[in-house]
Length: 109
Image 1 (spheres, rainbow, N blue to C red):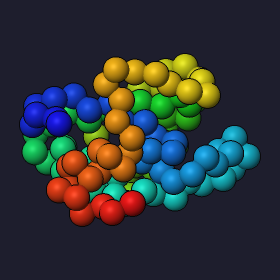
Image 2 (spheres, rainbow, N blue to C red):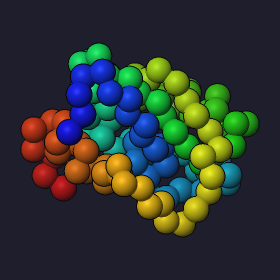
Image 3 (spheres, rainbow, N blue to C red):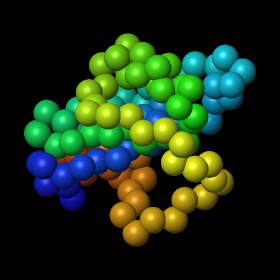
Image 4 (cartoon, one colour):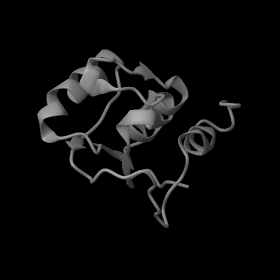
């Protein structure tokens, strides 16, 4: 799927994190360990990782601290991708399809 030097743009809420939480009300997301491990795999195989979120730039420090806490390696954070209820993209992969591909089927969800 990804070559070792490919750029991976990975979403934060509901992808690296579990569920759809109300961060604006102080809720803290839980990690999705399978997806995080797949991101690590890509990063440590010399891939580029950008965490791309619809959160506003005022949330960038919180996202960075969360990534640090859960040891998610990345090269950059991009905020304000635009908020929507459904994203259509010709390069899209679900979080668990990504994890299964990167980890060789270790994630059975």
